[in-house]
Length: 234
Image (spheres, rainbow, N blue to C red):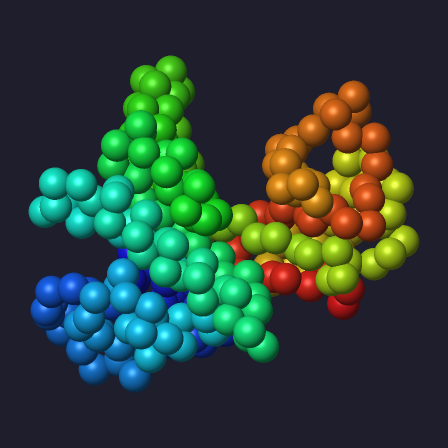
């Protein structure tokens, strides 16, 4: 995961802070990096999160502690502490929190604690196993989509303010044609439109005309590209 975050941030460098209750030792490849920090402390304490400027983070990932009897419950406490910081007077903001889930029965607890995205690995592994049995090399498709590198494609979101207003109202085929023309002008990083994210966070991949009649000014484009891309106005 650390390698993936570093690769994903290569074009837009960000510091990565690992907060651990117990001391850990990083692999040698990370020890000399100036953008990776390891801090020992209790992540359930507000003071620890404040000291690390957690409210300024682009995102916070809560990994499940496999050595604990109730790892999901601990992540609930951390999420509550993080969400408490969002309401700090004069510093109110939305902190995006992603949490790993171990017990599927605890999904609701994490959501009610304020976790924005709950990741249950078994949901994905079972689907990949089934599809790989039906279609050979399907696992390689998923591997490439989930791996940041110069030779693989990844998904990116293009927020409304970063694409031309002339796209408003266009159908999905018309939007795809426009993105294809854009891609022809940027052969070093071809872009493919794969879906739309609506204002209510609903994701529509390759939507049918009955599900998507036209692009709204609040919609986000979901594209696939080799390198990070967040702006289609150029």
